[in-house]
Image (cartoon, rainbow, N blue to C red; front, side, top):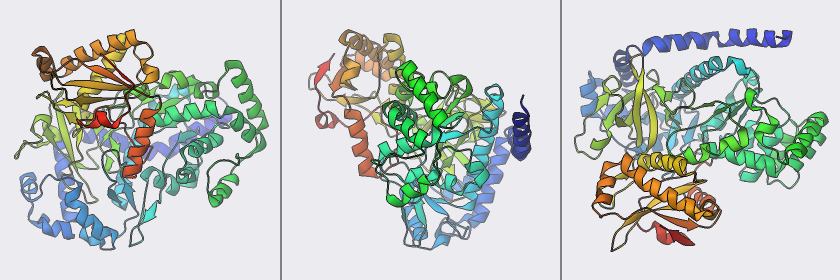
Length: 564
């Protein structure tokens, strides 16, 4: 080991010591989830008792978990929205004991118009603690790859899209945290946080690459793996321009970047002719320029979501990045961090029992007027539940619509994986098909048949003779019709394996076999852009739906042909 590397390692151990101690304490706490969660709930209620929400819901009279459930109903965002609106207009005490709201984090807009989530000092403390524990464990598990203290490629969003009447900024949380990082930590990130302010997607990806290709990158971090796929495609498509800009210390003039932002970015650019020559040689040798060519796989790691509907994008990553380890970021949203993954290759993570109080409703009871409600210590491995967080920043028994499954336990604390948004389901004949069923079945069917699935969505189609489900795939993925037909047969069988009611309806003839609806190349990208434009969401957090339950959906798409 060189002296420089030795000193960096010693420095890293020194600065991470407090986090390693915190991680040990968290691991000990995971042996006692009921006690930890009950104490946290009491702390939240005491702190927020004199807020408008606390008074309206009699927080001072609550002594037990049963009291809490009697006084505060399970509710979606709309129940707390009037209080948040008052905060946005300057009446902070309507919802929060904290007098300062640093930011309203905007939700992704995947399923509805964007919501405002108050970001307070309590929020940031929990957020930072969860990330630190996740990070230290991730670094420990990959010592041999020597990724510590090497640059990270992360794309965030705009930390200040607009302000509320009270002057509170509203924007992307990852962009905000990047902006307020200490200067020493910020240097570890290759992409300037200002990049999130670039609205044009092509320009944003280009700028991210311009600042990254000259550095010895160790990690790629993005909430959505589709971001990493697009980053890789942009690298190859723009390789000549990137190499020229790297050699000359420039930023191409035709990018759609506001003048003041361009000037700020230009001040950070550096010339690196030697690295440019190296990249040019790699591009000539391989006839392309992918991330695995620029940054060797044996020294990198990918950090991204792996659960829910991420499968089609995850399958594309090896083509561009090789086969580095993949570590899930956890069940993480603008509403807060719910889980902390401690292993590679799984979407499962331990509940962050220090940050939020969690309740759970069994999957089959979510529409019941009086569902069973369970604490974290009462969950059963293998079962699926809707998760309901209560936070220190104004969300109470919050029905976020996230469906999770218990995969095991860390100590006595459940480890859970995200399955999907629970409102995504279809029900033609009583089969109650969920997005989770669809993604599991599609992954299995694609593996069995060798069918490529760049992007897809399964949709119910009404037919007077016999209704059926159609999987919408783009023309390039349907080029081999014989293989596509094999895939459809495997998908039909796999849906029955995942959902016994689907199998019963197929066997009884009430449902027809799955068909493929072939749509033009690029149709899904255009559809996703239009959906994001209608909700005002964040491209980095957006999740393409793998199941749409709307019976009129087929009429909105250009279908070139059906295969079935």
